[in-house]
Length: 378
Image (cartoon, rainbow, N blue to C red; front, side):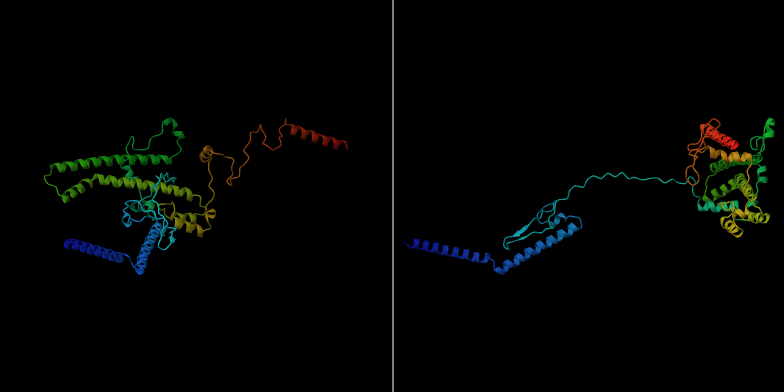
């Protein structure tokens, strides 16, 4: 064997020996120790326990973990965690509450709400400012409530024909007995005339204001305000105040007539005089608190007032609407039904028919005759 061949064999044997040594060293490095295996297993268990705890928290809140939480690269579906088996420990680590399923699509909800409407009042509520102004114009809760006069103002706005009470035809004057409506007709005619005159005054004032604006080169705020006051503080303002005086005065007269019709039923003239001193309010003909206190101190309504008596015409007026009201009429106020009135030709059910030609009447007559004959015989 030559030296070159010997060198080759030595080199190959040395390289083989070095490779074997490297493999043994790498195997020694890859084989972990027992402690390292235990440490690695404990980390895995801790990580799994942490994931299970987080999943339970999300389930208790009714939500799923965010997509970035999953280490599996899933974008919109949470992982399905089933029984986890660690072969190194040889036991089943099943998590009974860690199974998560993909959320189902929520169903389309259609709601048909059932509601009922409550009847609203047909009369609106008065604003506080308007009520305060009315009390000052009508002088409610004051002794001067019946001193709002209108007769002198009314004379300025009545005119014939049309804006005054209508005359009764000569042929039927004898039948015109309701004189109270004549005064109301006169007042309404005067108020209508005043309203028409107010409208004319408004149109005249607006025309004057527009003519002044057209003829003026420059207009500032103060000058315009002064011109408006100058134009509308004349006839327009006077007629507006007269309308209020007519309306409030006429209403005070109507309120006084209504009060008098009630006070005429007071038995004692001294009590009547005391009741007259109680002013009306914006709610009642007599101020509620004062009137209630007066009744309490003087024995009540039945002792102060007498029962009203109605004429034949008033009775027809009162009973007419009641008779025309629809609905059953055979009920008392207690709600118990009453037997309806039957015609005379037909007896009520369950009663004895005592008409002259009825069988019961004939039997009764025969029985009485028998008794009379027996009495005469003995």
